[in-house]
Structures are given as C-alpha cells and as structure tokens.
Image 1 (cartoon, one colour):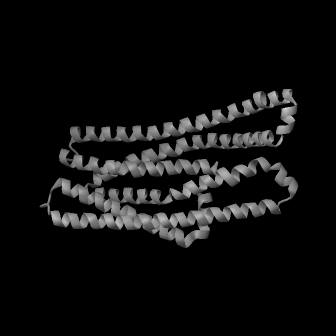
Image 2: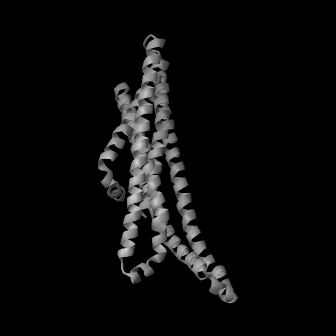
Length: 294
C-alpha cells in the first residue's frame, strides 16, 4: 500500500477529486439501496411519484459522480504511467553501463509488466472506494435498523478480513518466487532472441538451451504461478464459505432465539446481498496490491 501511495503522491489534488466522487458514488448507491428496501418493506404508504422522483434523481447523481471519478482516475493513470516510464528511462540512461548490463533482465519486466500492473491497480481505485463507501453506508443504515444485527455482521466481516490477511501473506511468498523466476525467464528468452545466430549454428547447444535450461526454469516459474493462482482462488472461495457459514449461523440464531423477526431478517438478507459485491471488489484489490508489492 505504501508503494501505491508514493506513486499517487504527485497527483494529490486530482486523487482527492477521485476519492470524493468515488465516495459520493458509494453514498448514492447506499441511498438507492435504502429506497429499494423501504419500498419493498412497505412500512409507509407507497407514493409512486415520490419514489420515482427520488429514485431517478439518485440514479442521475450516481451516474454523474461515477463519470467524474472515472475521468479523473483515467487522467491520473495517464500522467503517472507516462511520468514513471520517462523517469525510469532517464535513470537507466544515467546509471553506469556495467550496472545496467547486470540488471538488464530485470529492467524489461519493470518497464512493461510492472507498469501495466500499476495502471490496472490505479484503474480499480474508484470501484474500491465506492465499494467501501457502500459497505460502510449499508452498515450505518443497518445499525440504525438493528444495532445487534449490525454488530454481528461487523464481527463476521472482521473474521473474513483476518482470514484474508493471513492467506495473502502465503500468496505473497509465491508471488515473490514467481516474480524472481519470471525475471530469469525474461533473461533466457532475451538470450534466445539475441543469440539466435549462435544457437542455430550449434545444434547441441541449442537443444540444451531449450530442452534443459529453459524447460527447467519455465517449469519452476509455472509451479510458483500455479501455487499463487490456486491459493488466490482458494482464498476467494474461502471468503465465500465464511460469509455463507455466517449467514447460516444467523439463521439458526433467528429461529432458535428469535433475536429479530423473520420479516426483518428477510430485509437484513437483502442488505447483506447488496454488500457482497463491493466486499469482493475490495478483497480482490488487496490481493492485487500483494502481488504488486512482491
């Protein structure tokens, strides 16, 4: 996260606009969800004109805020990636030739893959902030409806966060291995391209280069990639299992101890379902940051 903050620091004013508009998008999303929930519960007399005016004005406000956050983050991304590319190129040219030669296999991935990962990460920032604002907004609304259910929900989400944090540490280890081995693959492929003439003339060396050296390193790199990807998928599914188990436990509490009415629990489930998408977005963002930090 610190690396991302350092990268975004030059665009502080535009970033502030992005964060504000993204949070407003989340607020408007929460208000829309609240209006839908109240219209379904039917505790007050339903007025079609009032509902339509409020609902579609919130939709319009949501759209304006979403467009502003999307445009501002696109501008941030363009400027930051452009500046990073030029800055890194200037540093490479200013460095001693021997040092550049020794790190040549690491430079190309930084100027291509790493910058693309950073660009993708920045692009996802508005949806993450919007998701967080939506989750917080629904939790606040839930606290207003039922402090007990909101507290239990917050506890469930904290369990998911702790498990996610532990799993991401394991994923980060394989991300680092994958990154280091990818640099070796880049170096071997670079040698293949620039040393093609020698490889063509020396058949034995060519066979050894591809069938032994490249195959061995590629297998090692793909093993790390497999472990990273499998653990990441497992982490996402584990989050789903924890949330579903939590909801199952809530159903048991409602039926055994009547902590809330069945009708209110149906409303509660509707609000929870609206929160699952934003939570998944935030969880995926944390996993992406872990891979970038590797």
